Image (cartoon, rainbow, N blue to C red; front, side, top):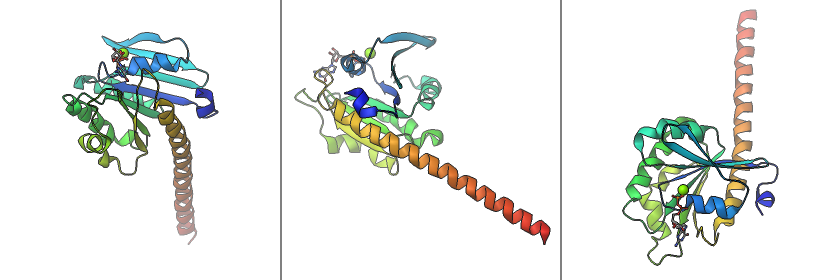
Length: 200
Ligand code: GDP
Ligand code: MG
């Protein structure tokens, strides 16, 4: 299933979210291979799964002072999967704090983000329009983003989200390439102009 979705492009994702939202459950249920726990910095645990050209790094967020470390890991990825517990209204602000740092990060501004609104099987899950508003997702404008309702324990909605993500990564990679080429062309033009000025 996973290979079918991501094929040659692979997935280099950071999966992030507060504790207890279902990150580890998703990682295990996807059953991609051995989940390895490591500690890249003091008291900062990450779980990693590697599978062919796919690597998912799973980390807990919510300690603001750790953002530089989180950012470092996110920068190495081609997408962010952010998991929230849809029933946990009390910590929506904590989610917002993290996401806002991510949104405002100049260097991460084209990175696609998939938000898993997990635990949809619970009776009081917050609805999508409200969630979109509370997490200020309207701020994302040009970025490729999607909120996908899901249930980690049954994987309902999970593959649908990942399917969207594979398309988003593909088209973003293409756009980045075109952008780079455009910049190169512009530079060439500038150089040519300079040469012409010299000759005149
Ligand atoms: P993590 O801290 O983000 O890694 O969260 P875990 O994957 O350890 O999950 C925390 C708890 O939430 C566990 O008891 C899971 O069984 C439970 N859980 C995870 N996903 C779901 C879900 O979709 N629905 C329900 N009802 N419980 C879930
Ligand atoms: Mg966990």
